[in-house]
Image 1: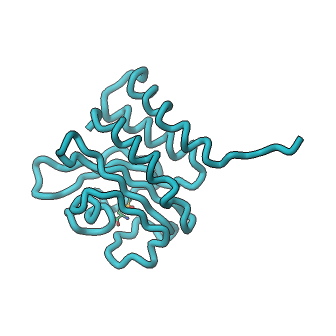
Image 2: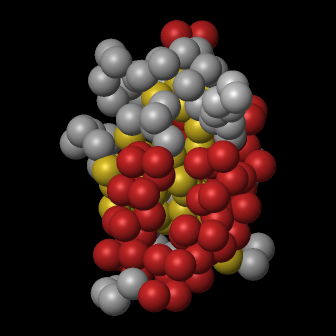
Length: 160
Ligand code: SME
């Protein structure tokens, strides 16, 4: 019999796995967010960098880097409006960039990054931060990821 591989399966399994981490892992909210970054990076082959930016309550309209999995980035603080993360912070909408070379307001973390998705995390009507995922493949993240990642950000919101 022909073996079928459903590439969307690991993506659809994520909400359940994230809920498991939130309910059953020991540790504080930051260590749970760290485990969630590592899970996404490990399970989804196209996800090369997965991280959370948080709204810094001590700063004026600025994001600060939280837990992440992947190469260290120089962009540890991002003002609202700057780059893809900063634009998502202003619009409060998911921002999908299938080819980062086509985006002029973009902060490059590494020349290897080819596509990116940023999903806002809302606590009620308050913007709390965002999930940022980079891929080294053009369209390695895209519209196909949006629905599950938006669902994940709702599940994760209590950790912010
Ligand atoms: N590329 C992002 C900056 C953050 S790094 O991807 C980790 C941006 O343009 O906002």
